[in-house]
Length: 233
Image 1 (cartoon, rainbow, N blue to C red):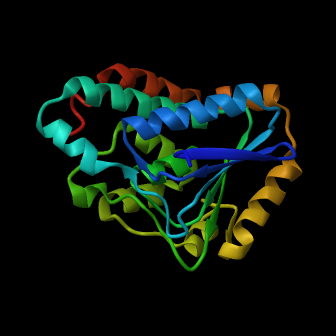
Image 2: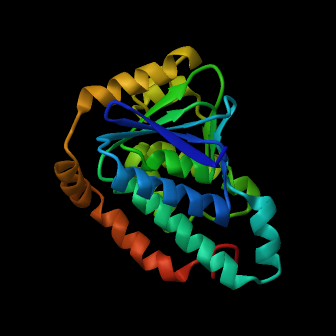
Image 3: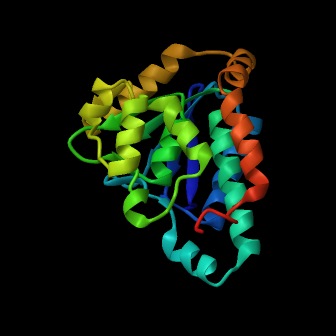
């Protein structure tokens, strides 16, 4: 079993994350699978779920990353940051409708990834959307904040960044961060039904995203060469 795998349900690609932390290998593999879906299928929508029913994604693999930062391994960390930026950029501008089926906790970089999707469904009763960086002493990159603002109302962006507040699926639905809070049994069927009901063509989806998200792209393009040089101080 690979870190990421997918299957097609009519014109919807269902991608399952068997790895829910970001390190250089997992991000590289994630990008590869996304490229394969785009180039080798006729999918018009992408749904991303996790094989873990408790955790959707916890973001950076700090056990892998922090020792590299402490040792000053800038070559590896800079490549990793560029790849992570590429992953978020690819998801943001993916040439089809994207839906996050959030099966459990979406924390930190995993929550940023969730913000990249066009639409989100979230499991109720278990799992939070949270940005705990203030407790970890890790600043959020400008592009991360820009992506948060795309999906989350500004008053909550400030609250969640400065307090590490955890939002339930029900709270996310009430603030229109997600389309719907679902039971685990309903989550995938709701997300798939939603995605199939849209059936939008790739060219127009691409053009619309290029306009909607061009301000975020400018931030990402400035950040890309900067990499981790100032991320951890």
